[in-house]
Image 1: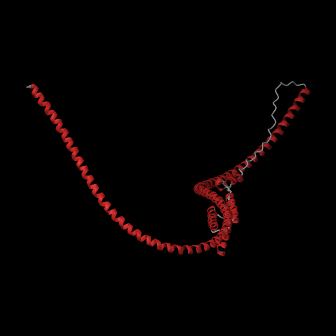
Image 2: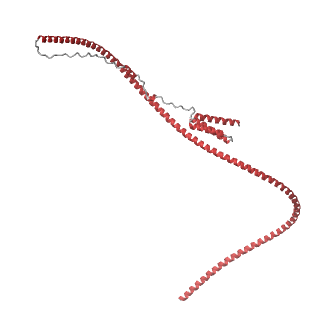
Image 3: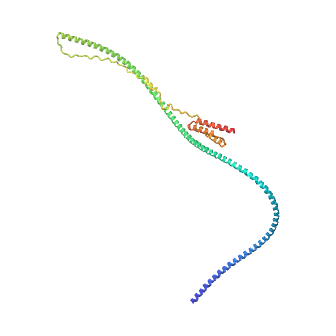
Length: 372
């Protein structure tokens, strides 16, 4: 039973495989039939195209026949035209000769034109070089103008600083003037007090002089009395000496007594009055002019008539007008020289000369524009 079942399974498997092969063959047949149908459709389409082409060939044959007839007509016309062409060829030969002559003339003219073009190119190159040099000079002038503007700004800042310093100096001067006025008032008060003291001292001096005169008179009187006393003492001494000499001569012994000698009278001292204090010194001190550093003569700088800003503005106007004249085709070589002179005078600080030269340049350019 098992063997039969196995055989049945094997047969089933074989049948299944064959069924699969049959299905594959069926699919292939269906695909082949579809391809054959497509080929039949193509063949039918090609037949229809062939029929159309046949009709077209017939139509083209009819057209060719017509064309042949027209070609024959055209041959006749071409023969007539060949004759005309020969005539035209003769005329063309003559025209070719004339054209060759004209070409020679044109070549000559081309050579001349090339020479003129070369000369013009040289001139243009020289003009371009001049323009480049002028542009470089203009750049240099622009740089100098920028530098001058920077310097002008610095000068303006310095002027502001100087103005501030002047204001401070004026304020200090006012303060010092106030202080000096107060000092003068104090000195006047002191001088008045000194004058009052001088008056008092003069009065005291007068009283002292009177006392000195009285003392001098008393001293003179005392000196006279001393002289009188000295004379009396001398006479007494002489009398004593005479008495002693007489006693010695008579032989009478006297006890030894010391001789008392009176000193000579002192010399009379003259009392001189003290000198009064000189009023000239006090008045000179009181009336001496007060001197201060503020009132010293400061050196005054002479300012130019034309300011730096005005000179710079005129120079810029002259430069712009010169550029316009150069663009208009005018020769500005002399004007450039005068501009250089103005620049040199400006850099040296002579603003009057710089502004004068700029004004002359403007007048010349205006005259040229008016003449045009």
